[in-house]
Amino acid sequence: MKQEKAFEILKTGKNVFLTGEPGSGKTHIINRYISYLRESGVEPAVTASTGIAATHIGGYTIHSWSGIGVKEGISPYELEAMNEKRSLVTRISRANILIIDEISMLDGKILDMVDMVLRSLKGKDEPFGGVQVVLSGDFFQLPPVSTGGKRTFAFESLAWKRAKPVICYIDEQFRQTDKSMLGLLRAIRTGFLNNDHRWILNERMRDHKDELPYMATKLFSHNFDVDRLNEEELKKIDDNEEIFEMESKGNKVLVEQIKRGCLSPERLVLKVGAVVMCTKNNFERGFANGTIGTVIAFEGKTRYPIIETLEGRRFSVPEAEWSIEEDGRVLAKVIQIPLRLAWAITVHKSQGVSLDSAVIDLSRSFEYGQGYVALSRVRTLEGLYCLGLNEKALLVHPSIAEMDRRFKSLSEAICKKFTSIDGEEVSRIQKDFFLSIGGGKDKKGKSFEKRKIDTYNVTKELLGGSLSIEELAEARGLKLSTIISHLEVLSGRSDISQKDLWRLWRARGGTEKDLEEIHEAFKSAGEDRLGPVRKKLGNRFGFDDIRLARMFLNTF
Image 1 (cartoon, helix red, strand yellow):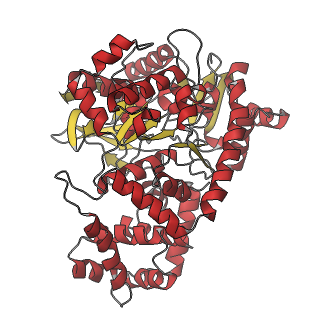
Image 2 (cartoon, rainbow, N blue to C red):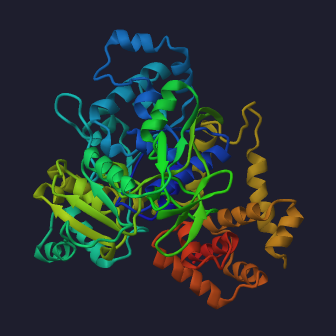
Image 3 (cartoon, rainbow, N blue to C red):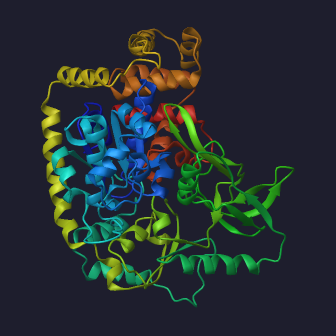
């Protein structure tokens, strides 16, 4: 299933399980759906199974949001007490949509408890109290951590079976473009690792004594190995330390959650020559979560680190903010330089990160999926250096491969069924759901649905003339970036013609050669994000031009 189809299914209000290989764009779809809802006046409950995952999407852990904390079960007495907590009741009663990211790491017993709490506090015996539940993740990645008793996967829970989520299995790939690397990862997923795949891995084996790329991050299974190596390497540098202390504001419990999930440490110690990893996206500055570089200086009075990548790009890294919001209000936040020492990180903390190169030691792997997660962080085989592995490293949980085949089959069936439904009927279903959750109204209950729908139509009507994008913006009294956003919406719903796109492209001075070059950069970057593509193009094109060029790919 393609990303666009999954997005349209999400808008119908169905419970959804969004899955696919690492790099298929699951987080991109989730973020797009969150933006769509917020722009429509609906605030979704954004959560994840772990602190790290919650920090990536700017939400709560599901344990914190639902009020279950570290409980292993909920008695009738505890459930009654939760009904007396005004803030918890208010938060859950307002929820119409619940998003849980990295569902693979959530024990099925916890999902059952969340379902129980929602049904009780919302006073409805429907699955999850009647809210739309969006579950996202890949069960081939790290499994749930069970605090006691038998570990169960989320799909084994009663709550999952009652909710009957529609399976959206994304089959696109935006991280790995190397066919050999993709083949290796898919062989591990399916359990069909043969001698050819083992030979490929053997070719990437290195000895600890070998000379390895200085800026290739080492991935280890244990925190001890990571901390030891980073401390040793930093001590080797004979230079003054620059220390950055994390600032925090807001609810103390939520602040602690952000700190545990934030990849940047509370006390960041840097020196010129330190190898670091960016822990947050900042495409305007030219870096993304996972960008590796070396500290070459500290900027003026601010002392912001200046980083140089292996390709020679340089940029300063200012403070960044990680926060948890609810109804547009910031409940807690931390502020820190978005960097961490990157001679080494743990496999666990590498989830969500894309690396150009990595040195991986899987000789002490102890959990299903660790090897798969580590290997899938690296974009190409050329960037992979393996110091060791044990048989556990290449194994996935025995019940997951079979379930994955079932997920794929169910996704193919729903894709065919959804495609067969008349477009007007789909639009009606989406609109009915949209209105049922209060979409199109501001916080005072005043409707703005008509205004939001009309604004795209007004732009569409103006396309029939000969106006350029700049003239469209002037005619509408809107920013250029807003008009391009309108064009992206129109393109996404096939309301813009090839003729109009070519006219707008040429009005900006764009040529067919330019368009081909940008499209080739998208394919080469292996993802749909603007920052990596602009980097591939040497920053010769602006973000607006790249966005416009991307519409050709999405439309035709």
